[in-house]
Image (cartoon, rainbow, N blue to C red; front, side, top):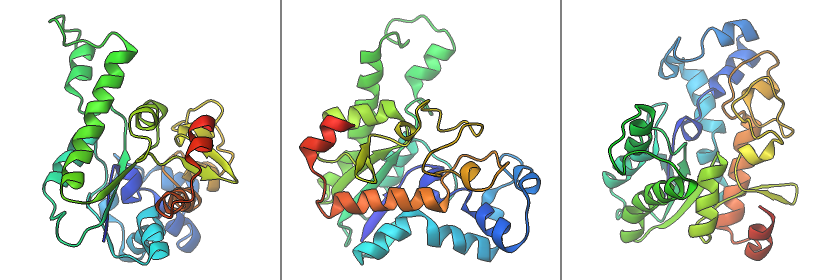
Length: 252
């Protein structure tokens, strides 16, 4: 079994819009009016929900590897602290072999970051340097990797933003999964865009990775089915041992 866990990207948020656009005639205005927090994506109809499950990268990876799987975060959203809690409360020694963790922004629910935002001045509570950020990120990654690894699972991490990817690549190179597209390596999803503004719907992703790239006018920047296929192929590439690690780490 493969366990997958992450934030809305792993859950497959937004893939429902592809279904509605293709099969129920939703235009970009109707889709934009149904983007959270206007609605709960968990309230999608059955066929749209099944479309999401079918096309998200967890299902694609497991189908290619011929292994059963579960996505641990059963609802939309999440942060790295919630990921750790979920992993600590799973039967990871009951037939599971691999855990794929999609790391999200380190700032989400981060107490040090929240203290900095609130302008507290107590010693040690505010973030002032990149090395402090890297230390926080490394701690988040280690916390998520520890339980699955201690229970005998192979554990791998992939990141959509570059700061998480930087620490994964430098501190956990054997567990780091970059994107692999047309023979080139990208350390994160942000890296696929020159501006690195993956969450800016007004910019174009050259690989059509986001919903905003495949349905003109849509403001949602979650992964499209094209993006999920790219992520899935990259994970499979890693699991099958096809990465040239020296070349990969030099390029990304």
